[in-house]
Image 1 (cartoon, rainbow, N blue to C red):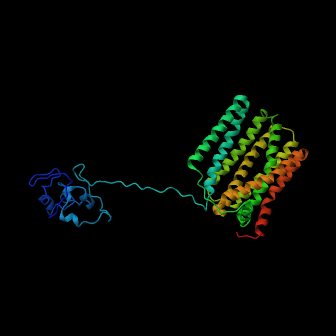
Image 2: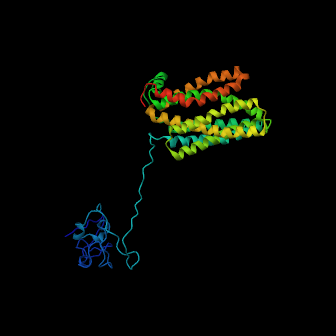
Image 3: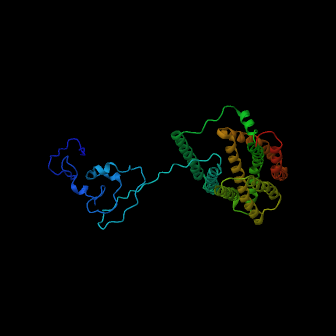
Length: 375
């Protein structure tokens, strides 16, 4: 005899039918013990397939001796029964939603993440110069708006960092020299070290030259501010194209790096020739086109450098990148001084910088192949 436990405080008198259909503590009704009405079915479903035994743990009228030996809920469920003529009498359909875990960034292939970061930077570089030109043309009100926007962005960044904190992993100890030795210890970081130092030095010279060339193009384009902002915005557009390509492709090979260096090497020489030529609309068009190509090469170069350092340095990425930035700033100092001291020879310096950039792939390949260190 099967006893059905009732909730605490409930009173069921023998001989009376409870709301659940069970007569007190007596055996289940005869209709549930018929041979043609197996356990697990409601009335009106005779001859059909029994319901899964998990429902007998829910409905009180399905408690019987036969349901106690049914297969556990963890077993494979029975195939669905055919629809019944009475609506609502079929088996209950329970939809299960799969909760997928959050995506995990692959430290062995960081190119896509870096490309997304570079896309956001490139968008700001495209939209920033025209906005700055508009603010500069607005006079004191535009300058005040620029200062207010800068302070608001700084306050927002401070609030976000104060709330979330910096959860970057702590790398091994050591100072600048230890990080420099780690960069020179393997092939990819060593290549990044050589190329980043050279590019940063030439970049300081190019930044000064772009401002001078924009002043000359102001005779053809509507003013210095418009020409300078247009050159900068097109550079950001080229970087955006390189970032989108990297985000689509994923892993970047050294061919992507050398293509970027080839595009970068043509820009300083073109700037030097523009200082000696007469300003014209054709010259402005060529410079604008090569500014876009220069941005593409710049984006490809820095994406490869950042990904190579992240893949090779492990938990010491922050210190390695900081070392690269320090070396780049130190390399840019003599180039900037040369642009100020030898201003009359600036076109020749720019052509020499293009030759230096064009020879970087071969120089870097020789330096990394014949120097000691792991691959």
